[in-house]
Image (cartoon, rainbow, N blue to C red; front, side):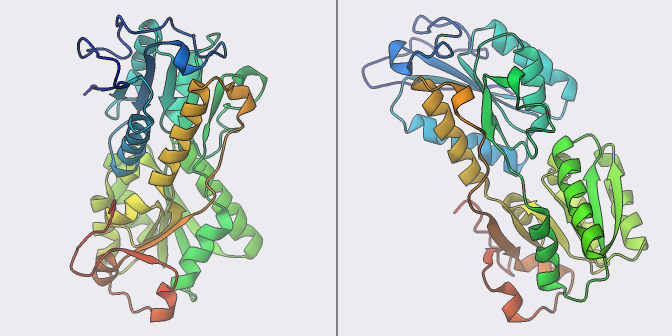
Length: 345
């Protein structure tokens, strides 16, 4: 479902609400005006399209944070949000429509969306500011053919992933990695974690899924192989189905660790991972810099300067955790034992 948000300076009035991604308006500047280095102030309305592959807590939080910060900037901006609703084939169509309708800048959320945006806007000077791409280089979003691309990565250091698990389970014998095989961001995170485990002599099992219908069986398979903990990184598909995942794991007393605070809010046990409000704010800052005339080529992609550490005490109760109080030091309680959530507070 497409949602249009118009942000105008007090001296301007938008005559009507646009129905399409970057649809034409009497206040709109020609496509590519900002990419040529002109500042946003040189045009009445700057059109930004935010495109995400599906809805789940993390992606929605990124989108809402970007929108909120752009709204608060006081600049004359028209923001259109687009959602492929889990249909990967729809991404290129959505982005092609945005290009045809003359957006001045596109914000693709997640790796698959950013890769589609690069393909669709190839040869075009429209700036692309991506959000939540775990490995921009591996995804083909850096280099000589990416002069109009920048953004913010949600990469998590592999060592921190494993330390997260052993902080609570120092006697853990085997980790189970579960991820979606088609998500480059998720595969990259798990591969890094496996490499670290190989170097440190830590045993693990892995199972990938092609679609969510396989999630329950995949979790059951890992549990049957004797894992003591389950880990899933920034995996958009699995993040949208945390209830299924955690129901299976917690019934067998296995903690689920994950790569984002939103996944903890949705039932995971603990994370040292991405604070998606912070990520969204950094993306919005880059958008504003481009609007003010900065060239994306002069703005190297960013990583997060700090990582979130959250726990879900209700989840701990569900799988029967008996961790010492010292294990929780430095972690913020995102969900209380009674289910009270502080997510987004």
